Length: 84
Length: 84
Picture (cartoon, each protein chain N blue to C red):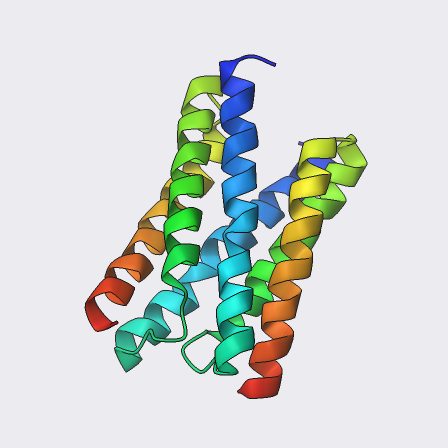
């Protein structure tokens, strides 16, 4: 892989792992009122579509990044719906 | 554009506009304690790298989506740092 491709990998890793600290915070504080439900719904849906897109074009990078982000954002959404 | 490309466009639009309701909520409530600062830092950095990636490969879609997301996530991050 060349430098530009590595840039894409690092960007993908950052925008995926970014949601881990949010999962941990919401899980620990059991408080999600400052999180926007429409944001979580739109984002989770969009990431799901990115996953479908990755599957359709057979891009392992897009599949991996968006599968992980889907799990994390869906979990945050579930906690938001539960904790309010 | 074929169906798969449209799927990518819709996915990109959703994961971009998703942050508008979060900006509006945080702006209205002036409360961001449930938002994770590390999440916002990692995500904003990652989106910035996606923007650089899009510029380097000359992809208008990646440039547009990530430029908009960068503005929105940076604004949420600024409000988090301000409101605490």
